[in-house]
Image (cartoon, rainbow, N blue to C red; front, side, top):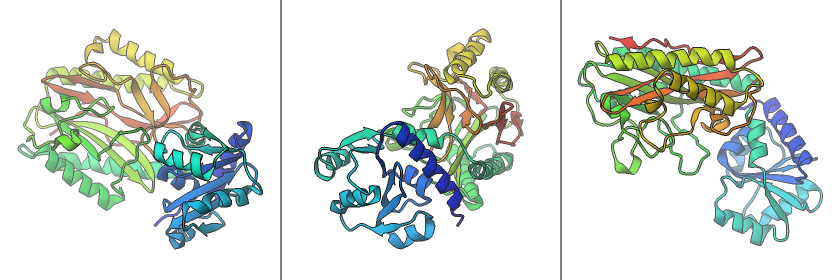
Length: 396
């Protein structure tokens, strides 16, 4: 088990404290698992108390022993009841704080009510989710190493597809084989999203017309899935020659994500999808000429859409019916929907150390989809793909 280095945790805490002071927040109270992992190195049932100008305190309900083993945060204290939380915050701050920052984008209303009415009455509770996400959006060298290792698993999966893809295999069977390979290679099989009701699965392994079936999920592809309880992803459909198979996989290694899409076909693919694939591949090449530090994310989104319109693909770009998704790329890290978003009306500038998945896709009803997705690192020179699997439409 590879622990998060103490230097990583220390740097993250320091960056958060700087933002707390800039925004007049006395103390951060961190509760959500993804943020706990990022700032402590563990997801034990706990609260992380981060005063703006003094040492943090991790107060743990369960398991204290595991938290002390996994996290470099000190001190780590036991908490038997929520009634102890206010005293712990005051102790960490060296007095009673007036402004307390919470992750109000993800904390349930009932939990917030408990904090505001019973634990911290008459305190100013403010949202610091944006500050936390700003700290998380710039990746360190260690985080980039974890994401490269996730990408190596993605490459393994793409390399295996031609060996597994045979006429008559179902989407679900192919997905199961690939997920098994990923787990053996280090993918831990749990996929974190921040957005409410945004549910994630290992793979959208979709073939032929099935691939163009829309879904409730906020993604360009959906697929029917195997149950209305989770109506997305691979279904029971058997794959036939001449159908483009989209293999869109999500891999997490040691807390960090990689998103990749590659296309395959048994025998000659439909001409229209070949043309579509040539277009989406060219979009990646063109993005590399304009995506660099200082580029504005919303402007990049509009530029990509303009390319689709000029090439005559707008009708099927990023969806085949309205409402379509309003992004072409999303940040990656410990969650799959981090900053930055290459999306409508976004004004964030790209900066060195950001990581995002870029996924231009064409969805044609009754025919299928053509898409290529890489996870990119923003460097001083531009963008670099973590994904080294061939970008060819692989025909077997």
